[in-house]
Image (cartoon, rainbow, N blue to C red):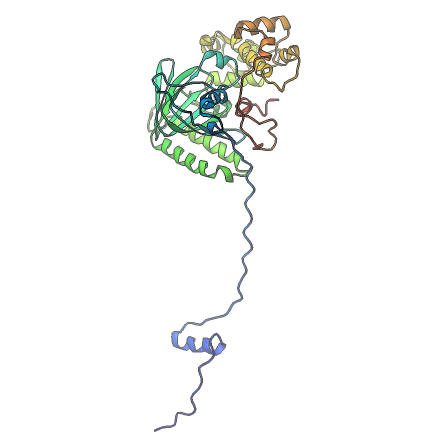
Length: 392
Protein backbone atom coordinates (compact mmCIF):
# COMPACT_ATOMS: atom_id res chain seq x y z
CA UNK A 1 0.00 0.00 0.00
CA UNK A 2 1.34 3.42 -0.75
CA UNK A 3 2.56 5.39 2.19
CA UNK A 4 0.50 8.57 2.52
CA UNK A 5 2.67 9.85 5.30
CA UNK A 6 1.73 10.57 8.84
CA UNK A 7 -1.93 11.55 9.39
CA UNK A 8 -2.60 15.13 10.46
CA UNK A 9 -4.73 15.88 13.45
CA UNK A 10 -7.78 18.07 12.84
CA UNK A 11 -7.23 21.70 13.79
CA UNK A 12 -8.85 22.73 17.07
CA UNK A 13 -12.34 24.28 16.82
CA UNK A 14 -12.36 28.03 16.32
CA UNK A 15 -8.71 28.19 15.33
CA UNK A 16 -7.29 29.81 12.22
CA UNK A 17 -6.61 26.31 10.86
CA UNK A 18 -10.24 25.27 11.18
CA UNK A 19 -11.43 28.42 9.46
CA UNK A 20 -8.94 27.78 6.65
CA UNK A 21 -10.18 24.19 6.25
CA UNK A 22 -13.81 25.38 6.16
CA UNK A 23 -12.88 27.94 3.54
CA UNK A 24 -11.44 25.20 1.31
CA UNK A 25 -14.53 22.98 1.57
CA UNK A 26 -17.27 25.60 1.49
CA UNK A 27 -15.65 28.36 -0.48
CA UNK A 28 -16.79 30.83 2.20
CA UNK A 29 -14.18 32.81 3.99
CA UNK A 30 -14.91 33.34 7.66
CA UNK A 31 -13.43 36.33 9.35
CA UNK A 32 -13.36 37.17 12.96
CA UNK A 33 -14.50 40.69 13.91
CA UNK A 34 -14.68 42.09 17.39
CA UNK A 35 -18.23 42.30 18.70
CA UNK A 36 -19.70 45.76 19.01
CA UNK A 37 -21.44 46.29 22.29
CA UNK A 38 -24.82 47.95 21.88
CA UNK A 39 -25.38 51.01 24.05
CA UNK A 40 -28.06 50.50 26.71
CA UNK A 41 -31.59 51.42 25.72
CA UNK A 42 -32.53 54.89 27.05
CA UNK A 43 -35.10 54.78 29.80
CA UNK A 44 -38.52 56.16 28.81
CA UNK A 45 -39.53 59.47 30.41
CA UNK A 46 -41.44 58.96 33.65
CA UNK A 47 -45.23 59.03 33.49
CA UNK A 48 -46.89 62.15 34.91
CA UNK A 49 -50.52 61.02 34.83
CA UNK A 50 -52.17 59.76 37.98
CA UNK A 51 -55.92 59.19 37.76
CA UNK A 52 -58.45 60.83 40.03
CA UNK A 53 -60.52 57.84 41.11
CA UNK A 54 -63.91 57.66 42.75
CA UNK A 55 -65.95 54.57 43.57
CA UNK A 56 -69.15 53.98 45.49
CA UNK A 57 -67.78 50.63 46.68
CA UNK A 58 -66.35 52.39 49.73
CA UNK A 59 -69.83 53.31 50.98
CA UNK A 60 -72.59 51.28 52.56
CA UNK A 61 -75.12 50.06 49.97
CA UNK A 62 -77.78 52.45 51.30
CA UNK A 63 -75.48 55.45 50.70
CA UNK A 64 -73.94 54.45 47.38
CA UNK A 65 -76.41 56.17 45.07
CA UNK A 66 -76.47 59.43 47.05
CA UNK A 67 -72.65 59.44 46.96
CA UNK A 68 -72.73 59.04 43.18
CA UNK A 69 -75.31 61.83 42.89
CA UNK A 70 -73.12 64.19 44.90
CA UNK A 71 -69.98 63.36 42.95
CA UNK A 72 -71.65 63.94 39.58
CA UNK A 73 -73.61 67.03 40.73
CA UNK A 74 -71.24 69.62 39.18
CA UNK A 75 -71.86 68.02 35.78
CA UNK A 76 -75.35 66.46 35.79
CA UNK A 77 -78.20 65.57 38.13
CA UNK A 78 -78.44 61.78 38.37
CA UNK A 79 -81.61 59.86 39.17
CA UNK A 80 -82.65 56.23 39.33
CA UNK A 81 -84.94 55.00 36.52
CA UNK A 82 -88.62 55.29 37.42
CA UNK A 83 -89.23 51.62 36.61
CA UNK A 84 -86.13 50.33 38.39
CA UNK A 85 -86.83 47.74 41.11
CA UNK A 86 -85.27 48.37 44.53
CA UNK A 87 -81.57 47.52 44.55
CA UNK A 88 -79.31 46.79 47.53
CA UNK A 89 -76.74 49.28 46.26
CA UNK A 90 -75.34 51.28 43.34
CA UNK A 91 -71.83 50.15 42.33
CA UNK A 92 -70.24 52.82 40.13
CA UNK A 93 -66.61 53.58 39.26
CA UNK A 94 -65.14 56.77 37.84
CA UNK A 95 -61.53 57.47 36.83
CA UNK A 96 -60.47 60.83 35.38
CA UNK A 97 -57.14 61.57 33.67
CA UNK A 98 -56.07 65.19 33.19
CA UNK A 99 -53.98 65.66 30.03
CA UNK A 100 -53.84 69.42 30.52
CA UNK A 101 -55.91 70.37 27.46
CA UNK A 102 -58.33 67.45 27.69
CA UNK A 103 -59.91 65.21 30.33
CA UNK A 104 -60.29 61.49 29.72
CA UNK A 105 -62.88 59.77 31.92
CA UNK A 106 -63.54 56.04 32.31
CA UNK A 107 -66.94 55.36 33.86
CA UNK A 108 -68.90 52.24 34.74
CA UNK A 109 -72.35 52.66 36.29
CA UNK A 110 -75.70 50.86 36.60
CA UNK A 111 -78.81 52.06 34.78
CA UNK A 112 -79.76 55.66 35.61
CA UNK A 113 -81.11 58.86 34.11
CA UNK A 114 -79.19 62.15 33.86
CA UNK A 115 -80.22 65.76 33.52
CA UNK A 116 -78.37 69.02 32.85
CA UNK A 117 -80.90 71.82 33.21
CA UNK A 118 -80.58 75.44 32.10
CA UNK A 119 -80.00 76.46 35.73
CA UNK A 120 -76.91 74.25 35.94
CA UNK A 121 -75.65 75.54 32.60
CA UNK A 122 -76.04 79.11 33.84
CA UNK A 123 -74.38 78.47 37.17
CA UNK A 124 -71.14 77.19 35.68
CA UNK A 125 -68.68 78.44 33.10
CA UNK A 126 -68.47 75.05 31.39
CA UNK A 127 -69.37 74.89 27.72
CA UNK A 128 -66.84 72.17 26.89
CA UNK A 129 -67.41 69.61 24.18
CA UNK A 130 -68.25 66.17 25.55
CA UNK A 131 -67.17 63.28 23.31
CA UNK A 132 -68.64 59.96 24.44
CA UNK A 133 -67.77 56.42 23.37
CA UNK A 134 -70.05 53.67 24.68
CA UNK A 135 -68.01 50.52 25.35
CA UNK A 136 -70.96 48.45 26.54
CA UNK A 137 -74.63 49.17 27.13
CA UNK A 138 -76.77 51.86 25.48
CA UNK A 139 -77.65 55.51 26.07
CA UNK A 140 -80.31 57.93 24.85
CA UNK A 141 -79.72 61.71 25.11
CA UNK A 142 -82.25 64.39 24.15
CA UNK A 143 -81.44 67.98 23.19
CA UNK A 144 -84.21 70.31 21.99
CA UNK A 145 -86.46 67.36 21.15
CA UNK A 146 -83.80 65.47 19.17
CA UNK A 147 -82.69 62.12 20.62
CA UNK A 148 -79.17 60.80 20.10
CA UNK A 149 -78.74 57.03 20.51
CA UNK A 150 -75.38 55.84 21.81
CA UNK A 151 -74.10 52.30 21.37
CA UNK A 152 -70.86 50.46 20.66
CA UNK A 153 -69.15 51.54 17.43
CA UNK A 154 -70.47 55.12 17.55
CA UNK A 155 -69.19 58.39 18.98
CA UNK A 156 -71.46 61.08 20.44
CA UNK A 157 -70.62 64.78 20.50
CA UNK A 158 -72.47 67.42 22.52
CA UNK A 159 -71.76 70.65 24.38
CA UNK A 160 -72.08 71.25 28.11
CA UNK A 161 -73.16 74.80 27.26
CA UNK A 162 -76.68 73.63 26.35
CA UNK A 163 -79.24 71.75 28.47
CA UNK A 164 -79.76 68.04 27.83
CA UNK A 165 -81.35 65.00 29.43
CA UNK A 166 -81.11 61.27 28.90
CA UNK A 167 -80.90 57.77 30.29
CA UNK A 168 -78.47 54.89 30.27
CA UNK A 169 -78.60 51.14 30.75
CA UNK A 170 -75.86 49.43 32.73
CA UNK A 171 -72.96 50.83 30.73
CA UNK A 172 -69.23 51.27 30.45
CA UNK A 173 -68.38 54.63 28.85
CA UNK A 174 -65.24 56.47 27.81
CA UNK A 175 -65.67 60.26 27.81
CA UNK A 176 -63.48 63.08 26.58
CA UNK A 177 -63.97 66.68 27.72
CA UNK A 178 -62.37 69.29 25.48
CA UNK A 179 -62.53 73.09 25.91
CA UNK A 180 -64.65 74.78 23.31
CA UNK A 181 -61.75 76.81 21.93
CA UNK A 182 -59.82 73.62 21.12
CA UNK A 183 -62.20 73.01 18.22
CA UNK A 184 -62.13 76.61 16.95
CA UNK A 185 -60.09 76.06 13.82
CA UNK A 186 -62.78 74.17 12.00
CA UNK A 187 -64.47 75.58 8.93
CA UNK A 188 -67.60 73.56 9.67
CA UNK A 189 -70.20 74.44 12.29
CA UNK A 190 -70.20 71.51 14.72
CA UNK A 191 -73.74 70.30 15.29
CA UNK A 192 -74.71 69.71 18.89
CA UNK A 193 -75.87 66.25 20.03
CA UNK A 194 -74.42 64.47 17.02
CA UNK A 195 -73.78 60.75 16.54
CA UNK A 196 -70.70 59.98 14.47
CA UNK A 197 -70.15 56.72 12.61
CA UNK A 198 -68.30 55.39 9.56
CA UNK A 199 -64.68 54.68 8.69
CA UNK A 200 -63.23 57.89 10.15
CA UNK A 201 -65.11 57.32 13.40
CA UNK A 202 -63.82 53.74 13.57
CA UNK A 203 -60.26 55.07 13.25
CA UNK A 204 -60.93 57.54 16.08
CA UNK A 205 -62.27 54.73 18.30
CA UNK A 206 -59.23 52.57 17.50
CA UNK A 207 -56.92 55.43 18.50
CA UNK A 208 -58.83 55.97 21.74
CA UNK A 209 -58.57 52.23 22.49
CA UNK A 210 -54.79 52.48 22.27
CA UNK A 211 -54.73 55.74 24.24
CA UNK A 212 -56.76 54.22 27.04
CA UNK A 213 -54.26 51.36 27.38
CA UNK A 214 -51.28 53.76 27.48
CA UNK A 215 -52.64 56.49 29.79
CA UNK A 216 -50.51 55.41 32.73
CA UNK A 217 -47.37 55.43 30.56
CA UNK A 218 -47.67 58.90 28.97
CA UNK A 219 -44.91 61.39 29.71
CA UNK A 220 -45.39 65.13 29.95
CA UNK A 221 -43.93 65.63 26.47
CA UNK A 222 -46.52 63.20 25.07
CA UNK A 223 -49.56 65.09 26.34
CA UNK A 224 -49.80 68.03 23.88
CA UNK A 225 -49.26 65.67 20.93
CA UNK A 226 -51.98 63.32 22.14
CA UNK A 227 -54.44 66.19 22.66
CA UNK A 228 -53.64 67.62 19.21
CA UNK A 229 -54.08 64.21 17.55
CA UNK A 230 -57.45 63.61 19.21
CA UNK A 231 -58.57 67.11 18.27
CA UNK A 232 -57.55 66.64 14.62
CA UNK A 233 -59.29 63.26 14.41
CA UNK A 234 -62.53 64.67 15.84
CA UNK A 235 -62.47 67.53 13.33
CA UNK A 236 -61.89 65.00 10.57
CA UNK A 237 -64.96 63.06 11.72
CA UNK A 238 -67.26 66.10 11.80
CA UNK A 239 -65.96 67.78 8.65
CA UNK A 240 -67.58 66.90 5.31
CA UNK A 241 -65.16 65.43 2.79
CA UNK A 242 -64.89 66.31 -0.87
CA UNK A 243 -66.39 62.92 -1.68
CA UNK A 244 -69.45 63.72 0.46
CA UNK A 245 -69.87 67.20 -1.04
CA UNK A 246 -68.03 67.31 -4.39
CA UNK A 247 -69.40 70.71 -5.38
CA UNK A 248 -69.19 72.37 -1.98
CA UNK A 249 -66.51 74.91 -1.17
CA UNK A 250 -65.56 74.92 2.47
CA UNK A 251 -65.21 78.35 4.04
CA UNK A 252 -61.67 79.44 4.76
CA UNK A 253 -62.36 80.70 8.29
CA UNK A 254 -64.33 79.50 11.33
CA UNK A 255 -68.04 80.38 11.56
CA UNK A 256 -68.82 83.93 12.67
CA UNK A 257 -70.17 82.96 16.10
CA UNK A 258 -67.02 81.00 16.90
CA UNK A 259 -64.85 83.96 15.86
CA UNK A 260 -66.91 86.30 18.04
CA UNK A 261 -66.77 83.85 20.94
CA UNK A 262 -62.98 83.74 20.77
CA UNK A 263 -62.73 87.55 20.52
CA UNK A 264 -65.11 88.09 23.45
CA UNK A 265 -63.25 85.61 25.67
CA UNK A 266 -59.91 87.27 24.88
CA UNK A 267 -61.27 90.76 25.65
CA UNK A 268 -63.84 89.98 28.33
CA UNK A 269 -62.51 92.54 30.82
CA UNK A 270 -61.86 95.31 28.30
CA UNK A 271 -63.83 98.55 28.75
CA UNK A 272 -64.21 98.99 24.98
CA UNK A 273 -65.68 95.54 24.26
CA UNK A 274 -68.55 96.91 22.20
CA UNK A 275 -70.50 95.97 19.11
CA UNK A 276 -68.64 98.63 17.14
CA UNK A 277 -65.25 97.23 18.09
CA UNK A 278 -66.28 93.65 17.27
CA UNK A 279 -67.53 94.72 13.83
CA UNK A 280 -64.34 96.65 13.19
CA UNK A 281 -61.92 93.98 14.42
CA UNK A 282 -63.66 91.05 12.72
CA UNK A 283 -64.63 92.91 9.55
CA UNK A 284 -68.35 92.14 9.79
CA UNK A 285 -71.38 94.35 9.37
CA UNK A 286 -73.58 95.26 12.33
CA UNK A 287 -76.60 93.66 10.60
CA UNK A 288 -74.83 90.34 10.12
CA UNK A 289 -73.57 90.36 13.70
CA UNK A 290 -77.04 91.02 15.07
CA UNK A 291 -78.51 88.24 12.94
CA UNK A 292 -75.90 85.75 14.19
CA UNK A 293 -76.76 86.50 17.84
CA UNK A 294 -80.51 87.04 17.54
CA UNK A 295 -81.27 83.77 19.37
CA UNK A 296 -78.86 84.79 22.16
CA UNK A 297 -80.76 87.99 22.90
CA UNK A 298 -78.33 90.18 20.99
CA UNK A 299 -74.59 90.78 21.12
CA UNK A 300 -74.69 93.01 24.21
CA UNK A 301 -76.64 90.41 26.17
CA UNK A 302 -74.25 87.69 25.03
CA UNK A 303 -71.22 89.68 26.27
CA UNK A 304 -72.89 90.46 29.58
CA UNK A 305 -73.84 86.83 30.11
CA UNK A 306 -70.25 85.70 29.52
CA UNK A 307 -69.09 88.24 32.08
CA UNK A 308 -71.72 87.09 34.58
CA UNK A 309 -70.73 83.46 34.08
CA UNK A 310 -67.11 84.38 34.69
CA UNK A 311 -68.05 86.22 37.89
CA UNK A 312 -70.27 83.35 39.06
CA UNK A 313 -67.43 80.85 38.57
CA UNK A 314 -65.17 83.04 40.72
CA UNK A 315 -67.82 83.53 43.42
CA UNK A 316 -68.57 79.82 43.68
CA UNK A 317 -64.88 78.95 44.01
CA UNK A 318 -64.27 78.43 47.74
CA UNK A 319 -60.57 79.13 47.24
CA UNK A 320 -61.25 82.61 45.83
CA UNK A 321 -61.02 85.17 48.65
CA UNK A 322 -61.55 88.30 46.54
CA UNK A 323 -64.17 90.82 47.52
CA UNK A 324 -67.38 90.70 45.48
CA UNK A 325 -66.76 94.17 44.09
CA UNK A 326 -63.26 93.17 42.95
CA UNK A 327 -64.67 90.11 41.20
CA UNK A 328 -67.25 92.31 39.48
CA UNK A 329 -64.59 94.73 38.23
CA UNK A 330 -62.36 91.83 37.13
CA UNK A 331 -65.27 90.46 35.08
CA UNK A 332 -65.63 93.74 33.18
CA UNK A 333 -68.38 95.54 35.18
CA UNK A 334 -67.76 99.17 36.06
CA UNK A 335 -70.62 99.54 38.56
CA UNK A 336 -71.35 97.41 41.64
CA UNK A 337 -75.06 98.26 41.48
CA UNK A 338 -75.29 97.30 37.80
CA UNK A 339 -73.44 94.05 38.48
CA UNK A 340 -75.73 93.12 41.37
CA UNK A 341 -78.93 93.82 39.39
CA UNK A 342 -77.72 91.94 36.30
CA UNK A 343 -76.49 89.00 38.38
CA UNK A 344 -79.77 88.68 40.25
CA UNK A 345 -81.77 88.87 37.02
CA UNK A 346 -79.62 86.23 35.30
CA UNK A 347 -79.37 83.66 38.10
CA UNK A 348 -82.28 84.43 40.42
CA UNK A 349 -80.12 85.12 43.49
CA UNK A 350 -77.59 87.72 44.62
CA UNK A 351 -73.80 87.55 44.27
CA UNK A 352 -73.52 87.18 48.06
CA UNK A 353 -75.86 84.19 48.00
CA UNK A 354 -73.84 82.66 45.16
CA UNK A 355 -70.74 82.84 47.34
CA UNK A 356 -72.44 80.72 50.02
CA UNK A 357 -73.88 78.07 47.72
CA UNK A 358 -72.28 74.78 48.74
CA UNK A 359 -72.40 71.68 46.55
CA UNK A 360 -71.64 68.50 48.55
CA UNK A 361 -68.91 66.35 47.09
CA UNK A 362 -67.16 63.06 47.68
CA UNK A 363 -63.68 63.68 46.43
CA UNK A 364 -61.31 61.00 45.27
CA UNK A 365 -57.64 61.18 46.14
CA UNK A 366 -55.68 62.84 43.35
CA UNK A 367 -52.06 63.37 42.48
CA UNK A 368 -51.33 66.52 40.50
CA UNK A 369 -51.22 65.24 36.90
CA UNK A 370 -49.34 67.97 35.05
CA UNK A 371 -46.79 70.44 36.31
CA UNK A 372 -48.17 73.96 36.50
CA UNK A 373 -51.74 72.94 37.39
CA UNK A 374 -52.42 74.03 40.95
CA UNK A 375 -55.29 72.93 43.13
CA UNK A 376 -56.40 70.19 40.75
CA UNK A 377 -57.80 68.03 43.52
CA UNK A 378 -61.34 67.24 42.36
CA UNK A 379 -63.20 66.33 39.20
CA UNK A 380 -65.25 69.52 39.55
CA UNK A 381 -62.09 71.69 39.63
CA UNK A 382 -60.60 69.82 36.69
CA UNK A 383 -63.74 70.52 34.66
CA UNK A 384 -63.92 74.19 35.63
CA UNK A 385 -60.23 74.84 34.99
CA UNK A 386 -60.20 73.06 31.63
CA UNK A 387 -59.32 75.57 28.93
CA UNK A 388 -58.74 78.44 31.40
CA UNK A 389 -55.10 77.79 32.28
CA UNK A 390 -53.70 80.42 29.93
CA UNK A 391 -56.36 83.09 30.31
CA UNK A 392 -55.02 84.81 33.39
